Image (cartoon, rainbow, N blue to C red; front, side, top):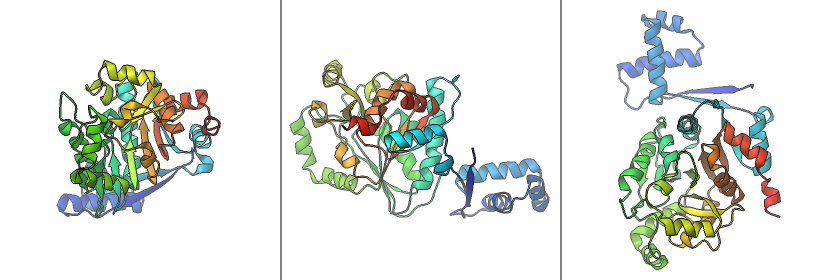
Length: 338
């Protein structure tokens, strides 16, 4: 596959001797096409030291690497997904020998590196919590932005835990990566009664977060599924009891995004659990200009199909096996809407 690589070198915010050496090495290697041996000669150091300087430049965010595949030469799977489901797809090549946990880590790593160049200054980025986003957050590289805000999409509390520690760590990593403010949403994932949610949504402190969500320029989320090999946190973390699960099954639910549930055809009307969910309405998500969905594992295929039928994603990052299954077994969105 032909690829065009764009190499970006950025000045560190707090230059030091090591940062200065990393910057010089990065500029000579990426911008001047010098070999590591030539750089070692100029810096009067060893080739292994140059290798370490380049690695430090990449790890610190001094160097950002982007691989851009023009649409006309994009891999066949990506082109088929784009044609059928009207999303920009990023398929992560993964060997079939890996288990689902290892696949998730590979997908999360590429997702983190795909997301970072898309985060701009003055952005409002909505972030859901969950197993997938937790993995993505661990791989984020630093990028300096100005007046950027990370806002939590849905509450994380349940009868066992406040959920603050789990969700806040994901948000903290996003905020640290992009020098952004972090706005948490300290409410339950699901309220016991719909009327409790209505009352809470009238509180000014909650309305401030809801209004911030309405200004989102980007959202990042995974797809929840009850039968994934790596269980979605909403299903494994004690958020739903047997009665809730039976209710979802009776409503033909196939998955959720940010604890808002939907069916295989993308519909969500009449699903009672959504009246108690703290997640944003799907209608609000669809209004966000850039909506990045990260999915790992073929066991999430039914939830992924439902999310695509609901029009929740503009960009999709997924592993190769799941992409193949999606193309082979799915009905195009245009036919679902008939």
